[in-house]
Length: 97
Image (cartoon, rainbow, N blue to C red; front, side, top):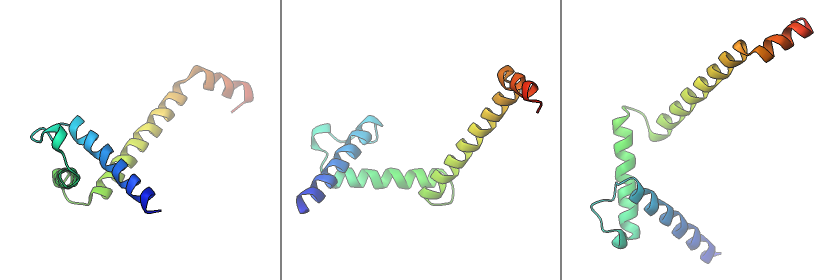
């Protein structure tokens, strides 16, 4: 059980390390020398910076706000497409809607 827990932790730390290096957040650190503590520290700093740059509200609130905004944009776009689609309009005429 403990072995699986440690494997999960190490897997997630590996993913965080890769994301940090890909996003150039960890440029100042040498790629081969990013220890677990360094990965966690850089991640915390990055999340704090994201939260502060997005104004007030927690990171989760900002993420949910962005999700809802994207969902609403998508729903509007689908609605606009369906209202202008010839296939939908022809189907409505055929069924008498």
